[in-house]
Length: 428
Image (cartoon, rainbow, N blue to C red; front, side, top):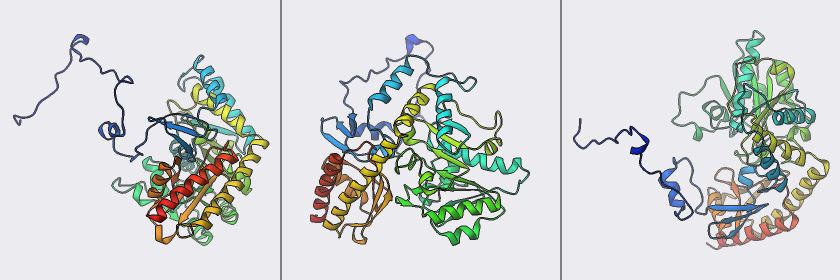
């Protein structure tokens, strides 16, 4: 054994344990702390937000930012929405967790509400969009097997899709940059070009158990599916006995001006997954499906420790009840129209930087021109310097997903701050 090797002594009693450091407000927490103690899977901004209300965020220096990213389309009712806070506080005084050996009132109320307002008959709850998609994909294979079609294992998805970060979901996603170094990857996966009907017809055959698609590709560039594309996917799945799965983790829960995007397309999936805005920041995911498909699962075939806990379910039920009203959803459409007009004005002012504008509702993307390709992150940092928080969707697309409660005044202010950032970029 090398002489320089040392070992930490084993503690034999509490009396021998070192004093646990107390991280009070007196201990400086900076961006450097992240680099010292967090596994380096992210490259966060230099600012550290400490409090927020609505679309306003303040950092450690008490500088205000206008949040047009909503935590990647999560805080759709804004930060610290008073009714959502109240729902969480009330449930926190009652019951936090009981495990899946029992059930609880909030989760049954939430499931009943989702079933009543969608195509679904059944709901499964988990902690994230990745988990919801994992459940949907596992169920698709189990569904085929339960009908004696053990040969139906193949899953079809789209290039540049994003369905989560588990090994299964990231492999289904079809973005090699997220799978490099993690092989061998799960087999029987086929990726096709998004919105390419001919490509879909060429691969969806009797060996396919499921097709999974985002009605609006979020991470892949904020690209909406065409109505014809989704209709053809539905027809092909019906013909081949495959399940059609809509991943609405990012575009669901009012983001498009409909409660779920499928409602605006008029194409009904067999399975729908959602998360993000469902909890407005409190972790929860859901998989919705029909009685027939849900029967593929039985006791013990799938599960989760925290999924559907009373705290998350109480928050999600309040969020659902607020968003799912004609008045609220109409306002989302109105805000979308106003935001598009504001962005079109910036397009005209900075045609050398801003290219195609696309999206639905309040999930919007602007592709950068060829001269500025690869500089989306640089522009978000410039916007941040002007007090505006926005997102990217790959290196070439600026992404906007403000809270659905955004006001017209906030839309104009965001456009003004983005204009300042673009002016700085153009001058540089």
